[in-house]
Length: 120
Image (cartoon, rainbow, N blue to C red; front, top):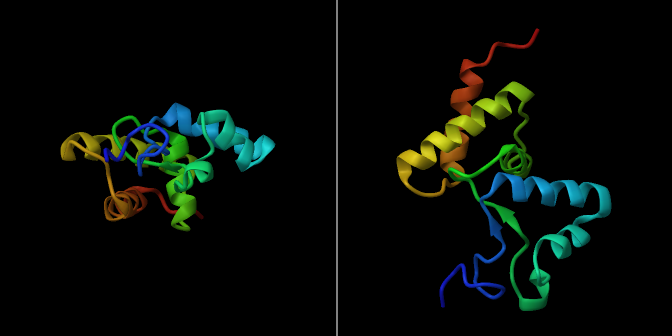
């Protein structure tokens, strides 16, 4: 079966678009994660035995995607660092011609943090 097949594909609930994932995060913060899942997807992921919605890092990613990945991995990023990481994620995605994985993200974050001015 095709992984991104609507509703039942293994990757049907993976979101690369930064705007869409940011909306998901906003609804989840205001009304709870279950309402966000119902509001964003036509069918709740659990109803079809699928995994939770997740952000995919790629050329269409946005700040919400970077924030979600940083939270998932326990990484703290400042506002400027989020922007720098996002620009590096997009550049790396174009370079790879595909989505990024955890190792790519960690490498980008380390590079950005190494260049960031130290906080007093």
